[in-house]
Length: 147
Image (tube, rainbow, N blue to C red):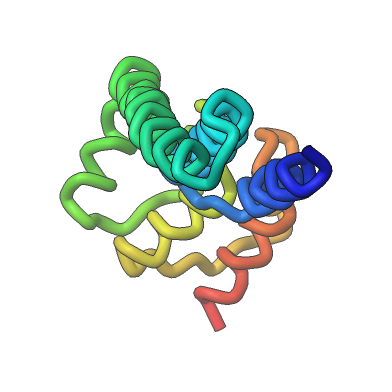
C-alpha cells in the first residue's frame, strides 16, 4: 500500500510538467487506474491493466478540454485561432487572448514557437500584458524572441 501511495504521488508530481491537458489527463488517469487496478486485482497485472485503461480515459478527457480551449478561442477571439491555425505572426493581443482564455503558459509559448512569432515589446506593452494576466514566463519568452 505504501509503495502504491508513493507511486501515485510521484505520478501526480510529474503531471505538473505536462504541456497539454491531454497529456495531464493521460498521466493522471494512468496513475489513478494503476492504483485502483493494484488495489482491486491485488497484483502487478491488475495495476498494469488499470494504468492502461486509466491512461486512455484520462487522455480522452484531456483532449476534450484541449478542444474546449479551441472552442473558447473560436467564440471569444476567432482571429487569434485563425492565426494559430495558419501559422501566422501572433500579436500582443493574441497572447493576451490566449491567457484570458485559460491557455497554459507552455501552450502559449509553443504557439509562439510554432508561428515563429517575434516580439519587440515596449514597456507599455509589457505593462498591458501583465494587466491582462499574461505570466512572467510568457512575457520573458516574448522578450527573448526579439533579441
